[in-house]
Image 1 (spheres, rainbow, N blue to C red):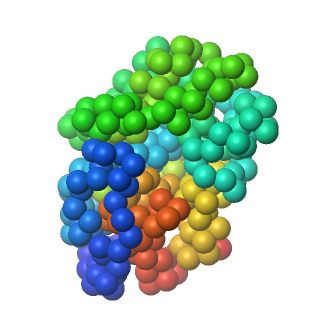
Image 2: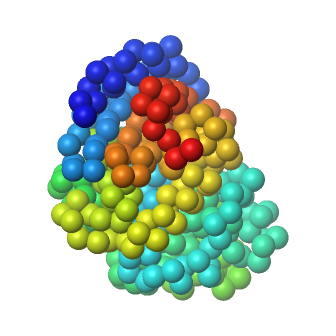
Length: 303
């Protein structure tokens, strides 16, 4: 399929939404990103990519990275991780301490911060180098050896990451971390500071559209595991607006406060969009609108 006319139409349709919302100023290194950017890319299951706007411009993927750490943990260690983290929507802010205490240190899902810290901790135990394993995987799947961590963003997150540090110490106190808190935090801040483009993300997420197969045809996840990741993305991938995202877009997706979103059309393609203006829930205003247009125009959703 030639996606270019579709992408051009979507970009024109969402133009009034670009610049709405606000950039994620609680991470100082992200506060200076221009709010007027917009990029979108589609990668089919054969690895062909089309894009529009700033689709080749790298940005901070933030929580989108949590998809890949979860997938690597499932690939390396099987489903044992589900004993340490749940699969339910949180209903509370992504960095909440209250729910973690109430539920005795078992985070609701792997995409809130506490849950991702547990997943990163497990990947660190399995590989000895969680951020290195993640970067190697993403470089291979995106066919881009330049994918790397933005050190300035990672340092900024570490300097202002008191809430995440509190979550880490709370998890450790309740027996749900295997490694030193400082080590887990360092790997977590690095993974969130990955800089990737819409092109990179669309390609790197293709294994979920291919039911677990990597770009080279080898199997990363079983069909069942790929279904699990897509399922958790659908119900928990857009912070406290997961229901609204399912209603408007109808696809498994994961957003990040850097303004990126990646979504999966199983068996067909992956879609990545970036626009830095985010709403109160942390989701890109123009990005959600673009994905809404995409599924409306194509008729592709999981419903």
